[in-house]
Length: 124
Image (cartoon, rainbow, N blue to C red):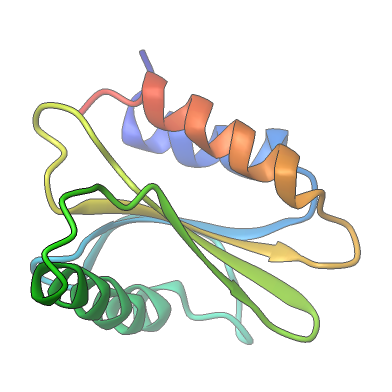
């Protein structure tokens, strides 16, 4: 099992093209942990903003009476992928992993696979 800090380090080192990663509580919009980022990528601001994305999708699913769970949300920019993976399991309700990837260096399929593995090993 991985701690939050170890999980974030694992994402940054094992996922090719990682620029930043955060664990976010979407009920509050607070980043519980961040790693990477920089002056052009403020992960705390991104965490708060992407909270609105998740809340909107959850509301839409409720209005459509979709009885399913969100695995992940992908936002594709010109030079980056922003991957939001909702955490499942006991004790993780309302949390998501947020990963920013350099589009030129990342393999999206592998990144999704690795993020799913990290989620499964994350201990909260």
